[in-house]
Each structure stands twice: as C-alpha cells, then as structure tokens.
Amino acid sequence: MRAARLLHMLMILQNRGRQSCATLARTLEVSRRTILRDVDALTEAGLPVIMHRGAQGGVELGFDYRTRLTGLDTAEADAMALILTHVPPDLHHLGLAEAGRRAQAKVREAFPDRTRARMAQMARLFPQASPAPKPDSRRTALATAVRQGRIVRLQARTPTPITVHPIALHLSPDGWALEDARTGQHWPEASWGDVNISARLFAAQATLHALGERATNPA
Image (tube, rainbow, N blue to C red; front, side, top):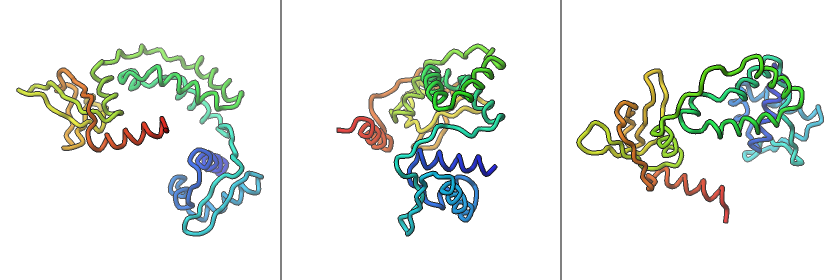
C-alpha cells in the first residue's frame, strides 16, 4: 500500500511540479505527518526530492527528474490495460473516439515493456465485442461548443429558439442534457430540436478560451 502511495506522490510531483504538504495530504488522503515520512523514504531511496521550508515552501523533484509509469500491481495493470484498450462509449457519442485512441496509445507507451505486454494480453482476453455507438451530430457539435465556450441556440419546442451558454453536457440514466451557465437549467436531448452553434463565445468562457489559446500558441 505504501509503495503505491510513494509512486503516486512521485508522479504528482513529476507532472504538477512543486506541491505543498497540505495539498499532497489531501490528494493522497493521508496526514501531513505521513507525507513527511514518505518524503524521507523517497530521499533515502536516492530520489532527488527537495523540501522547501516556509510559507511559500513545498515539495518538488530536482534535477528535472523523470520516471516512467511503473509500480502497478497485477490487478492495477489488468484494469489499466482495459482502460487503455477499450474506448468508452461516451467518446463515440461526442465525436472523440479517434482522439481517445490516439491518447490511449501515447499513454501505453509510457509504461515499461512488461506492463505493455500484459496490456496486449488483456486486450486479447477481453476484446471489445459491442459495436461502437453511432455518434449524434448534435451531441458532437454541442460537445465542441462546451469545450470552446460557444453560445448555442436550440430550436426547441418553443415559438422562438432558446439561447444557451453551455457549461456542461451531462449523461445520466435518463440520457444527455445540456446545462446553461446562466440559469443552471438542464435541457434534455428530447427538447433540443435543431442545434445551431454560434461563432461567439459567452463571457466567462471567452476569457478562459483566450487564455488557453495564449498558452497553446505563445507569441
């Protein structure tokens, strides 16, 4: 159990950078005292873990240390194999199945040879037999609008189109529903009618989108 937690901490520090002891304790669901003991254990194992003291302190990895994904037990490796082999139906519905397959392939490459071999074996033992669901073009368009923060107009069963600022696209046992950022109202799929995606971003998402574009394409 401790070995798995130490690996988890190592991956958090590698992927997120410096973390406070309080943040690590919340994420790993242990006490701060346990985090300090774990930091000592990683240091004793020869890993370049640096502890910074003071209000702005925290824990981080030094010397640009990088590690591959290792340390999974057999059950975790089997579960991860299926996660990284079978594309969730939701991705088909949202038009992201191919992107999901590419992401799975990239993540699989981060594992060592033995784990990748086990993943290939699990894929043969438990092939995905069910046909991929056919995506609804409206869901695909709305998923893009949610991700980009674009205003949507639904030609619902009303005299005039309904303008929605889509903050989320929910899937429940009752089906898909679009959430409006302004009112919190959920519009179920049966009420959508024709869907029109505006080129305009709504206010809160426009700022976030601009920041994301700036981070992705720095000047």
